[in-house]
Image 1 (tube, rainbow, N blue to C red):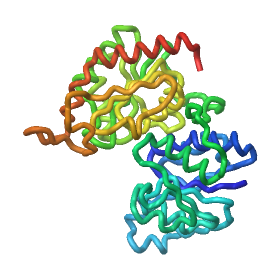
Image 2: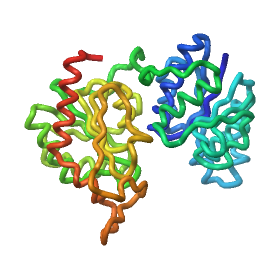
Image 3: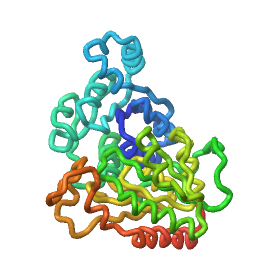
Length: 351
């Protein structure tokens, strides 16, 4: 049985879909998945052993061409590849209008959430069969329910398995520290998700005092500048060079733990069962929380506006890009949460 998954972006959303593939492979051992994904995140589906082929879109670049995108040779080649075979099922696991267009262009019976369950109303109109999937639950659970419904197997009640435990990962492309190290993921797509810079600097200092190196990844030039500012004057802190997503996963796997804001790398870290503390203010971990057996969420308290789902902070008289609620998450609280996960790792053993 060959199934096409349409889920284009973003990093965390892609990771959250992986347990559904594991469920399906256990119920239907001969199943194989093809996956349509944006070129920026194409490595993530390939990590799962049930994915045998990925098809890459570049919708952000194509969108810049406007109507000319229909004449773009790259776009036409993508459509030709997409329509080169008929699938036993096509599952839209993103359910917005962009993914619905891709789903409509594919060949095979099309499935997705109904109008009340889809991310963007109207996406459901292209599906041959729709499913009621409650939106007020963790995204991982939503996709596990959808895949079980589409592929007709009992929904497992086991914890989510991302299918990454038996992956053969490449050797790191960089020299990793010989002493234990932590990964600090301070960058986020929304300014309102970030922790206060002074807090990060104090956390990095505390990590050094406890004998840890600290590695700081980044994804854009602005994030690189932010990371350099946080590491300045702290010899044990290292800003990484730009790495592929697979290289970043390898760095995380070798770490003692990670502290993250709500961003894609938090989901990767948690899915790899790395001790991971993720900080939440503007968003709700009950819906999109980084999930893993050694993952913990720290949420702001005493702010009635949280979660606000706003890119910029607007509370009281303040208007700006520093989330006021996130300042309330203290360094000692974050460090205590992280070290409690170290204790859990020791009790359970590695892996």
